[in-house]
Length: 190
Image 1: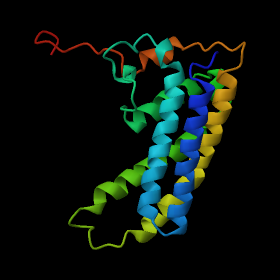
Image 2 (image 1 turned 180 degrees about the vertical axis):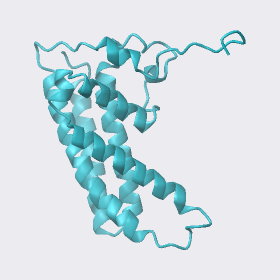
Image 3 (image 1 turned 120 degrees about the vertical axis):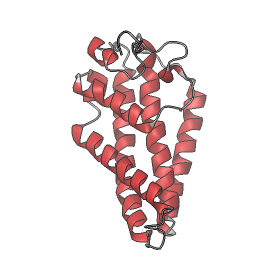
Image 4 (image 1 turned 30 degrees about the vertical axis):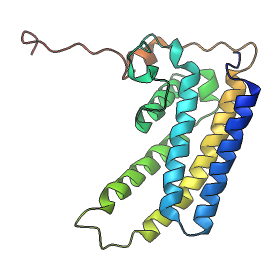
């Protein structure tokens, strides 16, 4: 596959990611675990979007107006992770050689924990609890996970952009895509 972004743009993006990865480190070192967790979540979301963005146009359901057709990073993180994971399970070479089942499990578990902490933060039952240790644990585990995801994404890019590699989107994965049009229920089909 051929790169569709200029080297200059890719270098600029790498500089941006280094900035935010350093900001995660600084936040953890400064005890700003809530900030670190937020940045980790954003980095994970972006990494899965960038993987998805490389191949989504090969899906027959990625059409104008479809959720994944949007050029910006608007899909839910779980949708992005699940899409990449489906291709991993289907043994698509560039994905299966780069990601592991364990990494997908860790990412999904971390996202669920982060979401639970965020949603419980401003609740009457929990607002007096001290969340500092929970966010510290979340940030520390998330830092390792985000590093692993960056590593997997680098392997993916290396494989995906090999001159002789051609990405083939499995039909079975397309059929499971949340962007696939669903039949509308009518009064007759109820």
